[in-house]
Length: 67
Image (cartoon, rainbow, N blue to C red; front, side, top):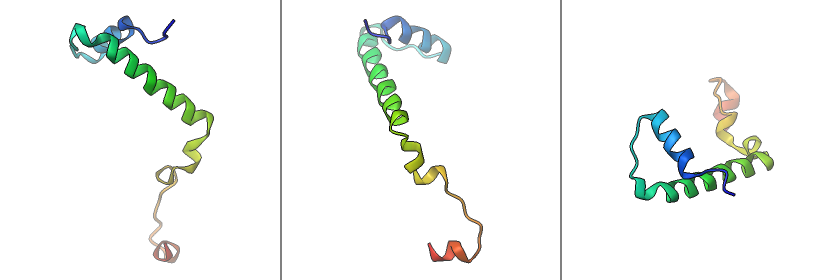
């Protein structure tokens, strides 16, 4: 059984105040399920620790000039 269903998409659409076409609900549910699976996989691999933007900051000092 899929954990993201057409009804899940309907409820999310209602919450976001959007109106997707009824004919596309199954495809949207499949895409959302795939997106959530990819996010979970990234978390399992701890990829956020390897994302440069997650730790990016400039002090304006000499160390920044060397980058």
